[in-house]
Image (cartoon, rainbow, N blue to C red):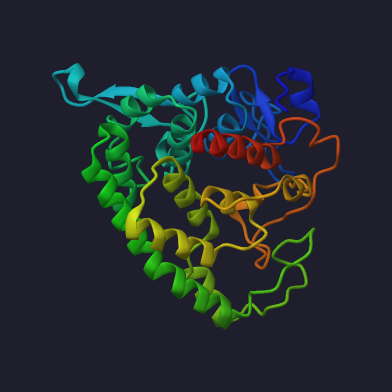
Length: 320
């Protein structure tokens, strides 16, 4: 359930809806400095990503506008030709993080707009994105083909995206499965935990190879959204879906749903909210400080759980 009350969001909740810009933040960590602009609404480094998830979960018009406002128009060249207008994305409002906005921020923003049927807005933004997303990050070829399809709706771009995504997974996923087995990182780790907890694997060269060369679960999460909002079938669709399911954990309800698997309401009701977005992490590897949220922090705006219901409704509607 989405709560828009300023006081409840700023003082109580973990997933914080900020009325000023319609975006989602979270509390600052103990080691973070204060901020005069965002105040209690921190986590601005991943705000566009988090708000994409929030727009999928709740479909609030304020969040849609907040996401769109994170794409600033600028004109290339001295002639100031409007036809050469491009969009520069930012990580949060107030042009925060324009220099290092990353692929994951933009993928979730576009996927959330596509999920909610904002096709014209998606086409407008996608058609004006540069291959260089920021001073720090470029698109990958796979993302470029996906963005070109969103901008044009031409089948040739969808086919190229499907081929590249399947090719990536055909290489990355078997290698990652082998490296994870080699490292011994294949046993569930109970919460709470962080990278310094007692772990069922050793942090030696094998673990380093897995963490350095393995396909991260957040990459699988973004790929699942890309495929979900840009459905492609045929042999590539079957191969890619099987590869993704081979990589994901059985406990990852969201990824199972995004790849077309049926999930029961009982399974969804048993999910316990955490201080992260657990659907893009693994339970057998500890890379961050993760714990379950108490009832007060998760009373409203529980994106991690609420997004499951939104995807279920969307999938059932698409089948009709």
